[in-house]
Image (cartoon, rainbow, N blue to C red; front, side, top):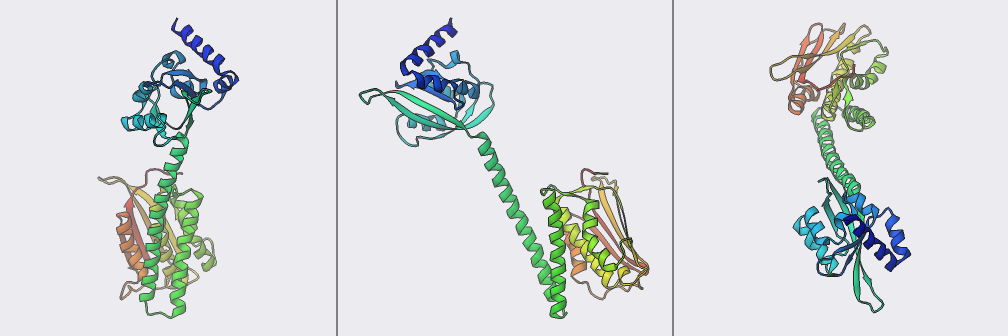
Length: 341
């Protein structure tokens, strides 16, 4: 009986406003008509409105539009919409609405008065545009912008450290320029890797291959590195820090260590080591066959980056030893959560 009554009301409304109502009923834009009385009772709701809100037609016809608002919106939104219906304030408010099943959506509400031949408002025509996805996309964009700002600041801080430490050295201007340039290029390569992965992180094996490839070319032999370990997935922060550390170790090897002679070799390996506080990722760099090693009298930028930088950035423990057989470095950091073997 209720359903027949609601259908009869729709038929009467369709008859009064003719072809427009037939078109409104089938359009994909959610639409309703209300009377212009104090309660703004619903006299028509199209299929798109019912699909958006989850109500059946007989559940809302002749019901107060305010009652629907009160069910689905907070009081502030209700007051904004009521003002729009009175022709006050914003005529296109955004609704944060709860469907009948409790799920939520955002919609822009457009309020247009319907007048009779004398210009008297007799009904209110309301249409909605679902902007839920747009708001979600905007929220993601804001999150990405915030993350980008954070990354840019971190990158600029790293570049500042590179330049500052290079300028503190007593080298020639050309040597200082080369030191700055090579480190920024190393940082750039890690950014390229992260860009490919949409900044979701990279595999450790991929990182080591990319960071050390230029030094294989310099050394003139692609088999002078031995690399072993699972392709553990690293976060962007770990990726950037390890890239710089590996660059410093390899640069030192080319200048003074294993890659400064023809027979020198370097082994890079890593493994997960159990720990009470959680597994640790332990990476080992070991040089062989280079010239006799003598510990430096003072620590340069490379040592500072490896020892202090990793410890600060990654909560890591770094051990750098200048053994007779070659430089040995152990990097111990909290383990990543997954691997791509």
